[in-house]
Length: 623
Image (cartoon, rainbow, N blue to C red; front, side, top):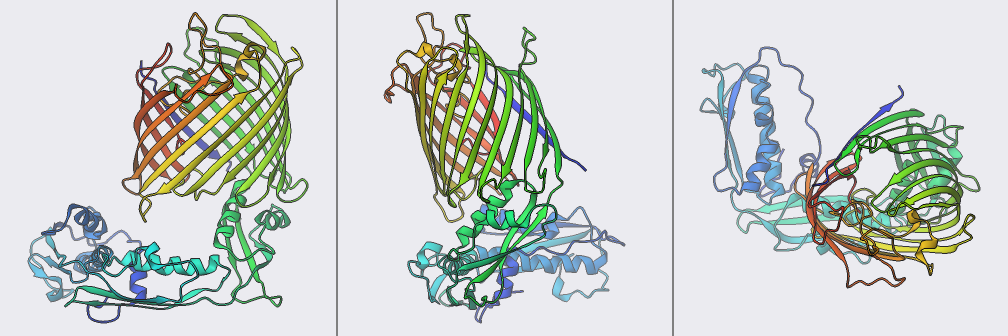
């Protein structure tokens, strides 16, 4: 039976034109790539109309872009105010569609708009146009595409070439490439320690005879300067000293990457709805540049709840309460609860109730104290465990890309294995973890690497067993095109459990794989060694391999094809020739907080307890 999991989570907070034979206007290029039109007020004296778009010879993708750019088409159901309003809307369309043509390297295009057969250039604001609803026709003749001609761009930062931005003689002369090149070179100068780098000139000339676009862009790198004092603005209840220290910018070379990662660190603290880091427009007396951190604080308290259903795991509900700034130092206190398997015939649900406190800046602004306690019950095909655990630890941000944590935990558990044997364990575990992350986005990376290393020695106070778990993994992300619409993602991970007899370790501490976060298509933790009766025993080692091709079809929707492979083994040395494989595809809906994913996976070597088809739903990419 297919596995279906759907989740609903609700969070409640307590209360113009480029000349075709003359220099282009830089400001108009900017207008074409991101400025919004004014908000249109409800219209008095509305003039209804019907609109037709004619684009003979245009490719389907270009026609769709022209349609999306047209305010006449987009707002056809909201008639403008009189003929003047309709004429204004039509003239806006000429500018917006011209921008689309330039984006696609068409600089000799013609856009003609008629109202009831008359060109808008021949209609006065008070003319009688006759038939209502008005018949509006937009004719677009794209002309021939242009290519880049002569290029005079510089000076360039060391190691930077125009080809990396797509600006090459003979290549399609898309206007977005010009803007991307300008922004990219300014950022490259800034990345190399020039905070005041700017473009001082941008000229583009389109030659109709040769169908070439000549480009001139000149830059002033400005002086080299390091990052100096940090000034905090907008902080109301959070200690500004913590904010400045957490940014960790003072004394470092000026770097856009360092600034972006500092913004992410501050957002991760929790109390801030927005974080923006800029700098003063002049050098400080010591030759550095003063950094300005501007924050906007959220409400301190938040509650949330959610519900889920799975045909294999049953129905579940969860809720939490969180305080984001308990004492003014971004301290986070959270209580959460979850009930699952609510529709099982046994009417004996799984649960998890937990509390967690995080105190930033216990030793310095980059070191946090962590306290946690939880009681839970978890049921899988291999075991059912009921446990209570407590932990204390510290985490440390070592650099923009490296962080680590050391945690001491103790748990008391009662486990019933697949043979209905009851075991009691009290493992005391010291866990050390290092995480390296150079990706550009936590929930939807398109460039960079991730790696982790975990060492967790344990001593069981109940059975006197001693063992350790070691885990490591790496993920890589690479965009295949400049627009980052196609991304290849890969992951490899392995774990080992240093114990001679697996039965001396509690069943829930053994190694398993399978499920939405490991090998999709298989039931949760259903891939592992089995005994002679076919019951899951758990392993001493495991391997996980995954690959995805991600395609961002539109700004809101994407598609994914994937293959996962993995297994858990009774030996301490993994056997990578014996892997369980799951294949599938999925869709992504992109939101401001990350993509919502829905994956459909098929297990190629299913065992008892595995579905024939599995559906996985979650927030963020699978890895």
